[in-house]
Image: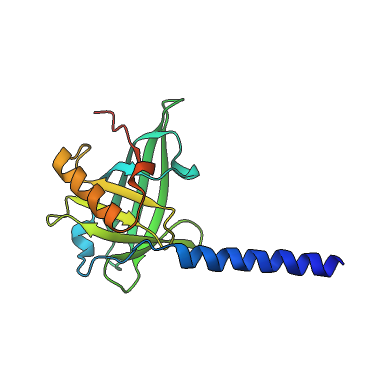
Length: 174
């Protein structure tokens, strides 16, 4: 009896994973051309999907620095809205062999996907996701985007199947 229950639970879990991957029609393809060196520098987080590792943070920004060996140093930071303290996370990244795809790690050898899906012609804004459609960021070189540009990015995200109504807009303390 216990074995039957365990097999039923495993079957349901497998069906959930398969069904979830079949019904997720989000387009997470990356840009076809990407200059890693040009992407380096400071990026301000304009909007994001909610997730635990940035919850409650304002003034969020990421700084990328290309090292001579081709790897990327990452410094993410944000201010905790309740305490007012600046929090930082040091990481590392490397190009994953496909334009616009990076692998990023903030802990030991555990890496996550970083997909640059849309990019402004002057590398002035980026729409970033990952292998999972649960993550989405709008980044810019400036703390605030012009409304027209932001609306364009939101339109692009919507066309890809992302729910833009779920985005949290980040206070950049301007």
